[in-house]
Amino acid sequence: MKGICGANCDECDLLKNKKCEGCLKTKGCPFGKKCFIADYIQVGGKEEYNKFKKELINEFNNLKIDGKSEIKELYPLNGSFVNLEYSLPNNKKVKLLNDDEIYLGNQVECEFKDEETKKYFGLVGNMNFILVCEYEGNGNNPEIVIYKRR
Image (cartoon, rainbow, N blue to C red; front, side):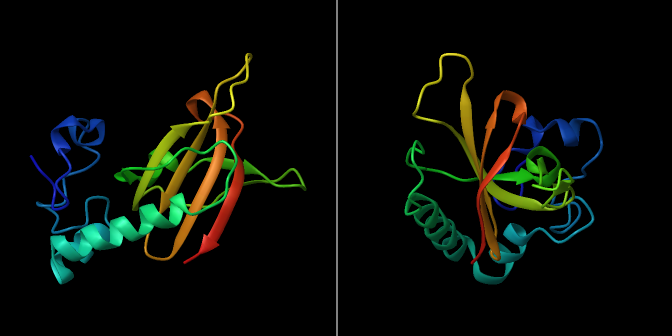
């Protein structure tokens, strides 16, 4: 089954485990909240959504972050996959995203090689913000690089 955005929902474990009914069946609310991607496509069409996504890709690529390679694509991602827990300077932990929302994102390997630990950049955004973080494999030890409103 293809989603409104074109994502192949059949490959997603959330659909397979019945935690999601898909955006077609729920009219763009696969996790109980309106998906901004589905909303964008339903209101402005696929062409306008693709323009928005290209603008977001360009915004990520224009950030001056040492070791981050060029982003060529952004994928719809459920918040539960990308909502990492960050340590604040006061040792409190915080999550910045919502597990039940859909974001556009990607992961790229850090170009600077560390012999002990591979590092990655996670990029997430929507119409309101962009977030870039750096972390080890499996999202371990995440650090916020950039979090800003758009």
